Length: 238
Image 1: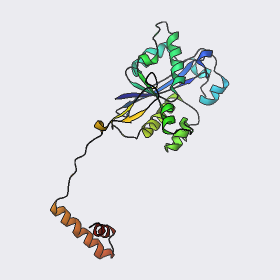
Image 2 (image 1 turned 60 degrees about the vertical axis):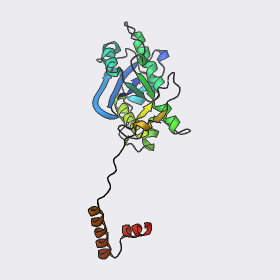
Image 3 (image 1 turned 60 degrees about the horizontal axis):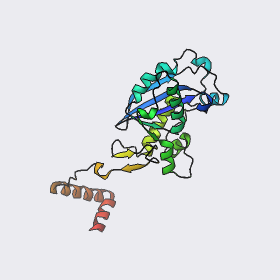
Image 4 (image 1 turned 30 degrees about the horizontal axis):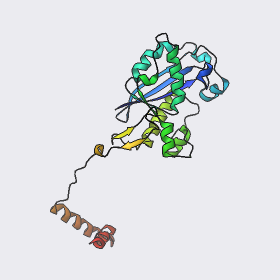
């Protein structure tokens, strides 16, 4: 199973007002493990950055002047996410900006969901923790994930943090048959565990010799310490 945890930074809050993407960060998960194969780029938006956005991410227009345009990074970005399940916190925000950027290309590459499926972790968090705060900082606190080094937002940093949050929210296991529905046509995000996918374990019973050695060890502890709680529990169970 290939998943890509994704985040973006932008020049402002509304793509409908002409704001642009200035950073993309994406972290690859293979079978629910971080592979170390990430995608990260800054982008020259060719427009000013709102003061409010600058306070959030600290990325200046001066810093972005020599960075590539979105048209230059679109193809490698789409190749990276193609066929994966995208994991995004508040997916409509990022998808709105990315789809707008794709629509501005001469090639008219379509929409992000033409290339992959999407899981919105904000919707998942709301299902798991109704009525509570479910932003990334709140989830980090809830799942005891250290984000104290996060003084400013950054696409790659936030994607890495979200990967930890997502794995914690969904059990932290590597492969227990977890499956998720994209919040698109199939309705709200849901979490289900397939019983047939649960691992089976072989039970090994102790031999007669092992049982005898166990009893001798408990007797030895009782003689040396004057008390053996395990032995007392075994006697109570008989």
